[in-house]
Image (cartoon, rainbow, N blue to C red; front, side, top):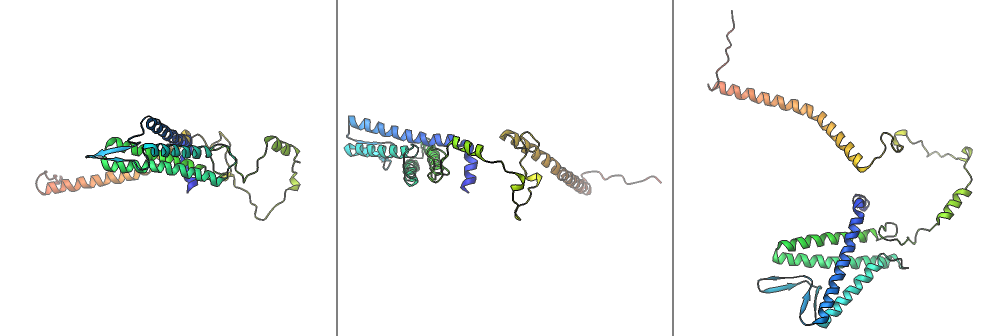
Length: 272
């Protein structure tokens, strides 16, 4: 199931990863702003998100800072988020388990923002609150997608760290192995009872040949043309049936009107 999902969103991969990184940078800048504003005057609460309903003010849980403790709390959050973000892409000698923990931290951080915005929106019902909640939900999805991509070494799409399970070969070594390999003669090829010849219609077509895979635009045009031709062929009998039903309904209506004297009856007299 996940393979199909990754295949569908693969064309938007760089945009999703970029949105996830945007949230990390945006949240860190907000924490820097909190620390800077609290250093000048530590008194009074400071919240990244808050709303006032009636005479009562509601502040985001976990994203509100007050006094010296608030400064330390903001600095701790910023340090943890920065370390987790760095651990997900820097080429450090860390295990996949540690990298997964870093992705979980970022997902929980995005989830904290999303849940707070949903809670505040349920209180004030403002349009801007709905918009912020929708955008944050998308950023949370992008963060989760990035975590899924970097969850294992084989499917890591946003990291340059090679998997520990797969051996690394230099390009020069591979070329030397290919050059030193003896050509295989036809009489050296063994056969097996389970081997069978692949039909020609199952073989991949050469580029440019009829039936060869083309670009996404070409496939879309071909599918649209095929669908239009199929729909036109199938619409003919439906159109004939529809015309027949319309004519039959017209006859029944005209007969009813003639029977009640609305329309004149046809002259059925014939010449002798």
